[in-house]
Image (tube, rainbow, N blue to C red):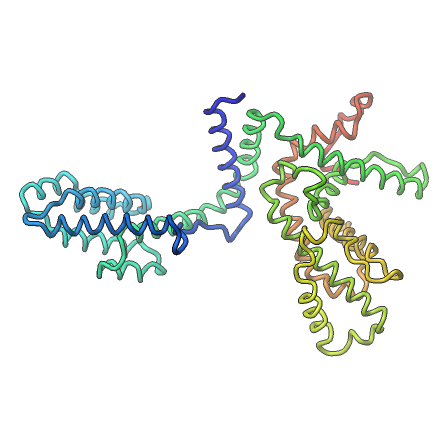
Length: 419
């Protein structure tokens, strides 16, 4: 029912939000020059078009008298591309570019047969050499021998300039990131009110599990120990679900969709660490702790385990909870490992000096560095997501935590309340 213009506006908004988020959270993000695959139809068509253009240009320049119609079009496009590469500080170079590539003067020279194309080409190549990154020096040198199309090299330089600009602006973007992403998502929500449906279902599932676990814990501790269910605990449990997400269960929450690939990668890495820890724990139980003191034993064992388990942690092979995915012995349930690892990650999410991670057994301490690194990366994603989307989570959690009859108790509700 939406109009074409509103759909285009929504698509543009989503694209801007995704691009800004990727620039901010992915320090390795950069644009790459697009080149058609070798031997592809697109590649062959591109090659034919380029060859036809340059052959036509060469034919015009070789005619008597020379025909500069294609050359003047090329010079105008080259000037435009060079101007796009200039920074605000390039005042003198910009003035020189306007003076040498004055298209009105060039047209007059063409009309009177006085155009010095070699001089202009030399100026363009020298300008490109002064602007380009060192990695583009070979392409610029090839221009002097007419071995590289000038547009192709200018395209590479423009990509380099965009990537340089992104790196330069990243610290400034970080200061505005939260407000920008929040405003963009609000704009999406206004166009598509159902854009939080999957998020609500995700939080509802986490709420049900947290309530069950909270009830069990309260019953074991006594009725006097009961307190209000924490919104932060529900949200942390929801984030933990993302590390072992099964797409067959429900749709991915909209508010975390931009980090799905990163969270999937962390989840697969976590599965591998759990499997490695299970093997180490089993080896320790069967062979005794003294084996682990042998020089090089643990390293070789982990290398062998990694090689043997390669691919076994994929979503296709492991549909169940990764914390319960490796049951190597009836007397050594891997769920114990899973509980310890989950407790470790939950503690890292909660943070703070008063909330320390649980003590790990000796075999698990062998992977503690990797777990800590994974937990840090996971916590960084969670913290940024919660900061951006907290105002969108709060109303949903308020309805879950305070049914209609208890809404009067929710006045002091805080998304960041402690458990």
